[in-house]
Image (cartoon, rainbow, N blue to C red; front, side, top):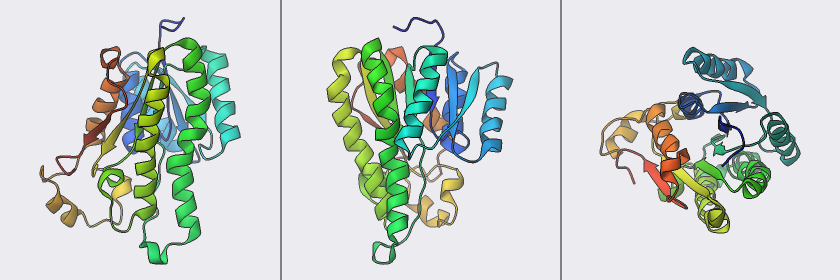
Length: 244
């Protein structure tokens, strides 16, 4: 276990939506949470304010998850300040939808870099520390789209599917050091990520006949980050209302 009493978590893309819900929930369990964001400082400050209103603790940590050097420096800064990162939640993600036949190279590359390459950029420096520390919880937010595919989201589905493979492989690499690596795969959740989508058609496809709430995903993440989930490793937990 870590030397300090209070655990430390880093949540990427924690300024809004699912990331905010995860950061708030972890902070509510007495964990010190670093809120990563790229450009929307106001949203990240709202997350921190919500955490403090619930008597939690945290700090803002702006850096670009698509840049390996930025990510490495940010992780080093946290380790210098806190001595450990016990929990990493890879949540940062974007979508740039369009049919593959018409998709620009930029739409492909940006989504792959932000959703998938960021896993390497942030997880590598964190897991090196966790291996030394012989403890860690890594949870990645993938998507039902990565399990079943979604028309108009070839780039997003490819990236999210890649995260599932990365999760399963890394779990096998580090499982003997008291480190677990899991993922949650949300279905359609009430966030800004749904903007521009046909919600009526979506609801029709979901057995639960409703959208999920960010807090429902956060509960699943919090469980996978807990000591009680120490024997859960390499798993993909769907939070999708029965969609997949």
